[in-house]
Length: 436
Ligand code: KE4
Image (cartoon, rainbow, N blue to C red):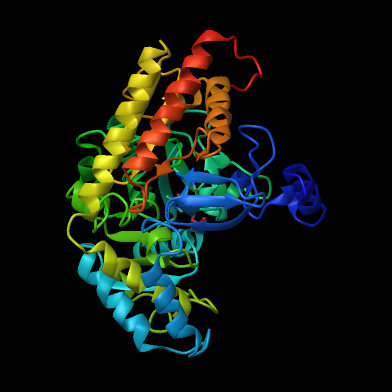
């Protein structure tokens, strides 16, 4: 049986960094990434047959749990009818209608293949609709890897963005202004200075790419008001929060309706689906009827849409979100208690079926600069200590954790028992580089 290291070195020979998405490489926590061979329910199983309680859930999609029988059944039925047609199907109409029924901001929706595609298309549409170029986003929020959004805060609080990746032209990054999350004053100032040029404010209504940072009371409402005042569009990136924090996403949980909304992850049930949508009068600008071009070979793929349809159908069953909320509350409460027993500062957060924790910080955590100051060594030691005890957490302090409906009391108790053991050991021994 090959060692993980061997598999990783083999992968690195033909895949950059050995992975098809950087966070999977374990760079933030060290060691070699686990190679998964199968998954079922709340569990991942690696190439050596070890099982892990999975709190990554493929970064959000697997809200029903892995290999859900109803999803597999639906896919088996579609397989026999072919995989892709490149032509409209009734399935896509049914799916679009369901999304528009469940998500308040959607009158029309266009399917794509990833959250990145959804974000880049929505930004282009907002610019086409308003005839303006400037975008506001928030530090610590991630909207996929399109050039316009790989931007970090510029030097001054109100200065234009600077590229956050090689290959992004400065001229493009300067069209994106990065502000601190939850900082309504900074957004007010930016709108006062640049409102006439502003096409859209793009925000994760529940931020899941800097750990988990919920919106402070009034933050989303303020963004709604400023977009109305400046004639710009409010875009909620619900790729992660959509169908994760509530059936209709964060916009129903916080009762703020954006002009455009991005979706992904959960709506594909594990297959590649993204979506963007909003008011029909905006969406009508999209080709083929309008001047804003957007397209995709496999958009609306019948297999992916089939998985999405059955996932949304099952999520409408009563009690799903209460179950996720209860588990999230018990898990984060248990983590906080274990850290307190170990006398380790440890902030936590949970919203619906997603959660976060911040080793070394006292809560509440409201913006990126706080998250960046968390105890990364403590995070790393905790991650590996939990992994060794069969609990697979996100391998980065800048990620959220995800709970599925397949996680039950047994998984909760095993996770908290492991956390108590690891944190007790971490509180005793000097940590530098050691893994409990
Ligand atoms: P994708 O292009 O990866 O499907 O979606 C991009 C995206 C857009 N918006 C939000 C709020 C997101 O969280 C994401 C992607 N999330 C990451 C996890 N933080 C995906 C994991 C990865 O990059 O491998």
